Length: 258
Image (cartoon, rainbow, N blue to C red):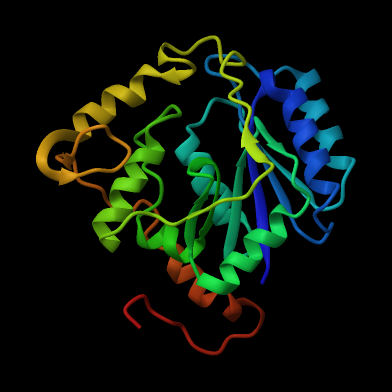
């Protein structure tokens, strides 16, 4: 079973992502792709020195592929993009402020997938590290890109998962991988409502969900119901997955309804 490791980072966390990739490459085979989304800072041009620094980082290792954003993009957008752009069904998403101290992490993840066939699960009950398949992300409609900052997109996805499957998302406990909570390393031109979380995302979450005793307990402290509906943001991705084999040698076009 093949899997891609995907990371989102930005300028203030350059030293953290360098350490993370060093730790990953110290135990993960070079044949495993690492996709690195280098995000721009809000209302700031990306410094050339930083761009070169990230290119040099990727050049140090085999199969580390950068994706550069010339302006700030949401975490939802980048998580969706990384999963769409990977060449594997399974995708291991890791935040840049994570300590990857357990060299057996990927083996544990693969063993869990083999045993459970799970297509979406968190690690240690956090979205700082989670695994998702292309198929399941498509079924859930992708992370909501109307959360144009970062934060709240994880709770929104938990709510939608419970809506679709009727139960909470699975979780895998792995010792030695944990979030460093580097909230002090933040984008300066973002209005936050708590720690480093943009106020906009919180305000949109308050519009999208309303407290209701008959609602869903997701990551909210009270049950909520959705009052702004979701929609399929990448409607043709499954068509692409079902037909990409036709590019090398055409057999027949598989339509979505098939």
